[in-house]
Image (cartoon, rainbow, N blue to C red; front, side, top):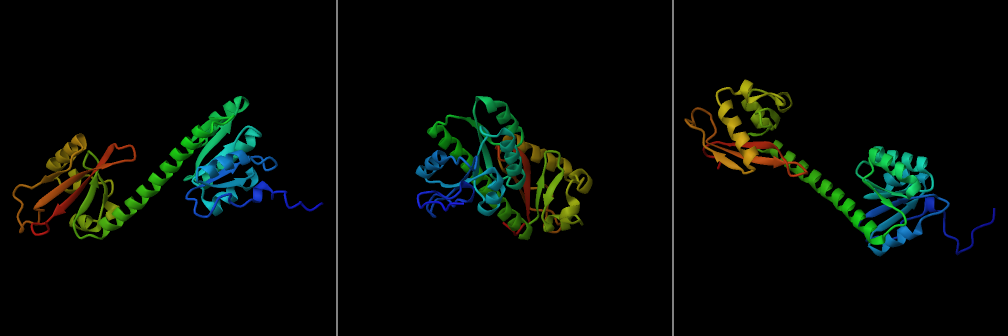
Length: 265
């Protein structure tokens, strides 16, 4: 087999990233290894992304090694192979957003790809501005998810280690979580308390607490509550704060309740 001349590029499936090391986000371009789509790589490079090119046979390996934010998968050459790659990406790297590229003949396959977990599809011939807009949105979505995950983990560690009782309730007063202090006050453990109701564990205060939880969920506003007849001697909290907890779509799904003793605030 003749050796490639100096001007011959290495096979696309084995190629290294196109961009400089300071590029922030990696984008994987999955296409026919025999016909690498350098046009896509050039667009991504000009926008400041770090581009990776791989054939379908190398896509999963590159995903594992490089953890790209987005994978652009071409369905126009071999739809079955492209759909299989989408399936593998979704299974092996659910944090990587798949954008599939289609033409008129592969429109039905693009719909199937969405069902397999693809983020969206884009028609060829490509519009560079539209492509970059969609890539940016996918990257921002991943960045937001990662930031939220890091924040959630920091909050969990903080809540688990503070001495104040902290619990999370749904609108019916059912425990979604509780730290060790909150669980011990009820003679239980954090794992055992999940799914239990205030009506069962604290029937003396359940009705008032559930009414407050629903008020916070309906209004979306945090509030403070001073329990009646609470004294340092009877062991009840002198102050209770309730905070609405929102999900990724900004819907209030729970209320966090923190109990303060008379001298803890």
